[in-house]
Length: 271
Ligand code: BTN
Image 1 (tube, rainbow, N blue to C red):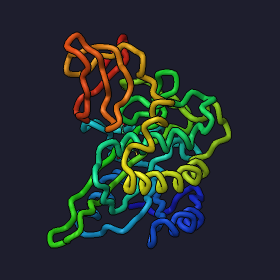
Image 2: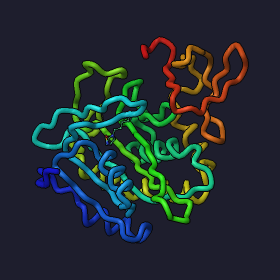
Image 3: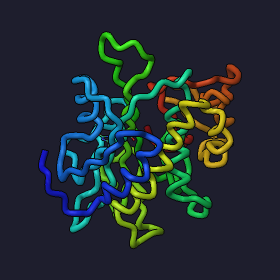
Image 4: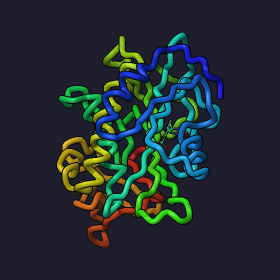
């Protein structure tokens, strides 16, 4: 792990803001790593389950959902992407809807008033004008053998395009924050996101998806659109149910899609 970062990541400031909610919370910034998610999952498997936020300026093996690789924008003088993972033990009564709740938190931090039309594409991609601004990868590690509590170690990995990036080879064209915030820098965006994200995750642990359902609906970019699913079915998207499932009205009736293995696109966009 190369240690010298080119940016100041405000580690102490972020840790001090979050620690009252998550005792023992720390922030680590590194110049390069294979993947911040992979690193926190490695640590969890080795029994290290402390709450931590790990941010990297470059990833050599970034990972996306559905086993896909995640490529970040080319670094200029400043980090052109914000790449980080939050890891913490969590024991909600029901995990359904967690990834949507995380998406809600990220969207509300990036575009609090909704004026920039930053929205959520089920389950948790962040889109602007059908272009992808943020990817979120959520993983959990089982508690180590012998631990009696029900907590799993949760790793939430978030990649945000800050500066421009090339669309070549991407399934969804990219959007980036500088399109409407040309002065934004990755460290300040992290400082804006971290505390609300932790709050949201703890709120989800206590109360489940219910407090997030209407907020998701307000930012849902698929609702009311014809969609096609990777399993071949197609229909009208009727938004998200109270458990976080995608509701699609097909010829066979209303389908509730909960599987993370199914991907969905607005009709007309290639898979
Ligand atoms: C997706 O849209 O497929 C999810 C992309 C998630 C990318 C982030 S970048 C930080 C963290 N580390 C990873 O390897 N992946 C996530």
